[in-house]
Length: 476
Image 1 (spheres, rainbow, N blue to C red):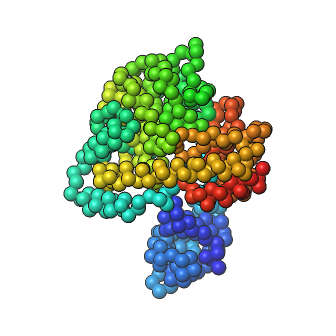
Image 2: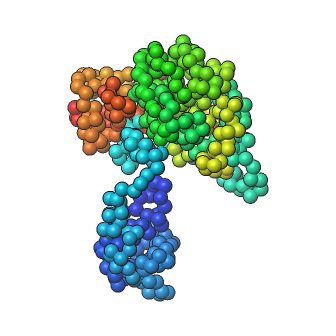
Image 3: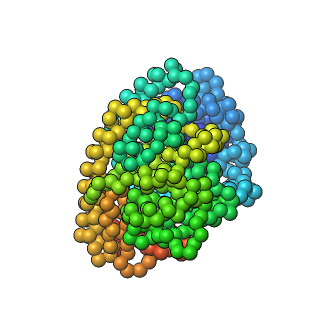
C-alpha cells in the first residue's frame, strides 16, 4: 500500500505538497515504485493519508510536469520514469553526488568546521533549552494583528525595509523596559538574532581580526564570527560572567550576554560592565550585547542593558522575539551604533536580511495595543514558577548527582555533575529516554572547562517537568 511508504509531518516549515512530491520522487528514483505502475487515485490516496484531495492533485501535477508521471482525465496516474534514470531523486546517483567533495569558499569551509551542537530530536521533548512555551502565546490577538496588516498591505507604499511603526514601538519599549538609549532610526528589523550577528560580522570584521567570546558561550556567535574570518578567542567566566584577561590586547569585537550569561545565567556586575566599556574604543573595539532573554527576570528588578551605559556608540544591542513570543515569529532586531547605521542598512539590503513588512506592521500593532507587555507579564509569573519547580524537582530526585545553579531570570538553567565529566554520555542516555538536554561541555570552544546539563524550564508545564526529572533520575 503506497500510503504505508509515505510519512507526512503536519508541523514544520515544509508544506504537505512539497513533502509528498519529494517522497514520491524518492520512491520512484529508488525503484520502490516501478515504471508503468498506476498510483492510487487522488481521492483514494487523500483518504489513506488523511489530507485534502487538492494536496494530492497538486503533487501529481508537479510530478507530471517533471516527467515522473503520466496523467489523463479520469485515469489513475502512471509512473513513467525508471528508478536510477533520474539523478535528482533518492537513488544511487544522488548518493554519489552527496559523497563527492565540492570546492567550498573560505566562508563555507569555516562554517562547516564550526561545532555548533544542534538538537538531537526533530520534535521538541522536555527539557529542551532555549525555548519559551508557544502553547501559552495569545494566538488570537496575534492573528487579528496579522489579518489587519494583510488587509492594509495593498494600500501601503513599499517604503523602507525597516518599518517606521515597529522601529518607534521598539524604541519606546526598549527605553522603558531595558534601559536602551537609541532613536528609532538606529533600530534594524531582521529575520533573527543570528541574522544580526551575521550582519555585524560582515560589516566590521576583517579576516584575521581577533574577537572575544564567552567560554562556554553561545555557539551561534562563534559560528558567525569565525565564518567571517575572525580569530575567535574563548574567554573564561567567573561568578560575574565574562572575565577581563590581563595583558591581552583589546580585540576588534567582544561578544557577550551580560544580562543572563549563556549558558550559565550569571549576571554581569556594574563594575565588570564598566570595565569592558572602558576597554572598548569607538571604531576600534566594538561590543555586541546579546540580550536574548532579557525580558525575563524573577528575583529582582531587571538590570538595564549594557548599551544604556554606553555614551560613545561602542555597543551593538541584539534582541529577538522568538523567546518572548514564539519561534514562528522569525523576527530579531539590532540597535546599531549611530556611526554605523547607514552602512548597516546598505549591507542589510545587499545581503538580503530583510523581514516581511506585513509581519513587522502586525508586530508594531501587537506592541502598541499592549498585547506584548501583557503577555510578558503573564509569562514572567509562569516561568518563575516553572523555574522553581524544576529546581525543587532536581534537588529532590537528583540532589546527590547534580548541583543546580539557580539563575535570577531567563528560560534555562545549568545543573553541574557532582562526579565525573561524562556529560555528553549522560545527554545521549537522556535523549534515548525522551528527555532532551544539552551537554555543557559541548558549548566550550576548546578543552571543556565545565561539565553539566543545560535544562530548559520555560517551555514545559509543571507536570511535564516532574515526569522528565523522574525519567532523568532513572538514567543516572
